Image (cartoon, rainbow, N blue to C red):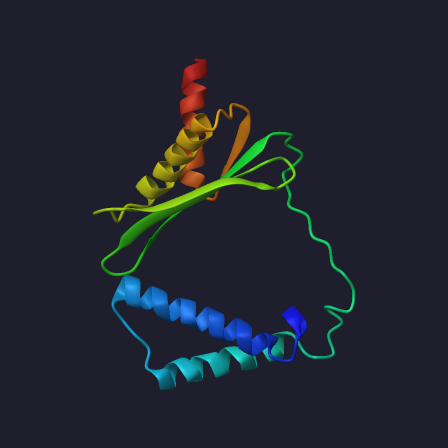
Length: 162
């Protein structure tokens, strides 16, 4: 049984579709009928079976993965902001891990009355900096997928040098 049991695709598809349906209820005030939910689950199972055929040797051997800290010997702060839906809802989240990838702390939240993705991306960095300060962490690296935020910080850093 376990992760690679005979019902693993059904389990994964059910969890995914239930999560999507819940988000649609919370964010979009939509709800799938039981028939549509079942149809979507079966469609996801079919897709997973096509992507991962049973002749695959995945699971036959232990596969080890490693979190990449890019050789930084300090705490890593990963952050991300998002805007979704109509009306748009802005949210954010982040995680602090040590150099080996072990969880230290995490945070998330919603930004009321905002649909500005740049604000969400900057706000999550701010919240991550506050959390690091509260935890007494002074040596850390922050990762964000927002090139705009990175450029803002780099430009500000360059201005401080001159």
